[in-house]
Every structure is written in structure tokens, then in C-alpha cells.
Image 1 (cartoon, rainbow, N blue to C red):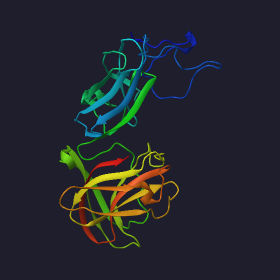
Image 2 (cartoon, rainbow, N blue to C red; image 1 turned 45 degrees about the horizontal axis):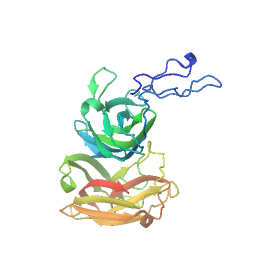
Image 3 (tube, helix red, strand yellow; image 1 turned 135 degrees about the horizontal axis):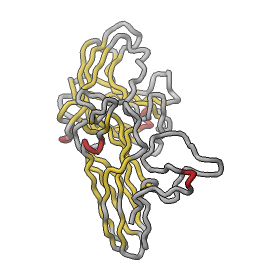
Image 4 (spheres, one colour; image 1 turned 30 degrees about the vertical axis):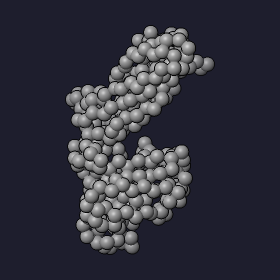
Length: 314
């Protein structure tokens, strides 16, 4: 049985609910904002384990759907029921969003040692919100997909939602200091590598007039352009590319090499999709302070066009 409401420690903690807006800790001295029993809390005569949370695909268009899966196993010695719960949060939006919202749940019965894969479908209805004009919309951005046995025991994976014209919903990075007047543009297009539904097309033109001319696209793994992320447990950067047959470069920007020319690795964007894989050590980093990944064309004047898909750090 799961708690359908949040139980506070005392009346001084009221109001207390799981889907509150993000804010500072407003608890009293010698008190806590942690609930006595969180929303979704339940007891059992056995114990359960949640593993291998995945969302496929990791990036969708605003009107698309994604599948969330998690393995739930009975780690105890008795039969039991568990209720995996799906919560979603949009990190950056035009109006303030709750820290989490329940979007689905399932009850599964497991024998001792038994494991089942539980699946949820994320639809536009699960991602939509009311904007400032009270219109029901799905805004592009990064969504946190959380699954667990209760609202305070969840594992999180990100889901990127892209607009119809390639909008990411993220703040734009500052313009590069040394690219001159070269230009680039991005567009989400249908038909990606390995039969995926879409890819990112990058077009632009290299114009002379700077000591080092380049243009391309810059991915930001942090929650803002200034945030570095610790990916030291990852070893490899891989992606698929195709394009106009020209030479391109992938670069990894870190906090430690900020303001310097980052290490580059070259690849050719040919007419057919091809997978490329590089060790993070090839970029002279252990991944502990990664700030961005750039895919760019440099120095050669003229127009360019390439597509990238399934960018992964693993």
C-alpha cells in the first residue's frame, strides 16, 4: 500500500506536498522539511531493488513519445507487490515547474529472486504544461525522468525534447571569440543513423578574416553554459556522422582548458552514416570537468553541411 498524501513531521511543517516549486529550505530551527512519510511511501514484508533505468530514445521531438524501462527485482525471501512510480520534471521552462510530478505507476507481483522489466510510455500529455497565457504546450528542454518506489527514492535519467525547428530550450552559449564572421545554423531533420527518427543537421559558411576561422555546433552537458560536469566514470565519446565529404573536428572543452585551444580529433562526414569513437584521454582529459563538446568545420573557406546523431559519452 502506498501513501497517497505526504505526512509531515509536525503541524509546523504544513503545507507539505511532494510536487512543490523549487525554493530554499524554509523549515523552522531544529526542524526539517523532510516528511515523516513521503508521497508514494509503502511497507512490505520483503525488499525490492530498482536497476537499469533507461529512456529510449534519449532525444525526441516535442510531439514524440519515449519509452522508460526499469528492472525491479524481489531481493527478499517472501512474495510481495511493489509499485514503481514515474515522475517527471522540466528543469528550465518559461514558467516555474514543480520539482517532480507523478506521471505514472504500476503494481507488480514478484516471487523471491524474481525480476521484471517495467515500462512506461512518455507522451506529449506527460510533458505538457500551461504557459503564461494558459495554453497547453510542450516546451523544448531537458526533462528529468525519475523512477522509484516513492517520491524520495528515485533514480534519474535525462530526456531531451527538441522543437520543430531544432530549439533546445537551453540558454545559448556565448559566441566563440576566435571564429571570425563565420556562421552556422542547426536544424532537426527526420531520418537518423541506424534507423533513428531524427538527426541534427549543421550548416554554415567559413569566412576569412580571423586568425582561426571555424563554425559548428556546441553541446552543453551541464545545466547552464558555465557549469562543468563530472564524467570521470565515462571513457569514450562516440557519435554517427554524415555530410558533404569534408573534414571536420570534434573538440572537448573542459574547465581546466577554458580559454585555450581544446584538443581536437578529426573525422570525415561522408555521404553515408559512419560511427566514430574516441577515448576521452585522446582529448587530454579524464572527463572530471567537462563543459562542452564541439563539432565544427575550420579554416577551409566556403559552405559546409553535415549531420550528427546518437552522440554518447559512455
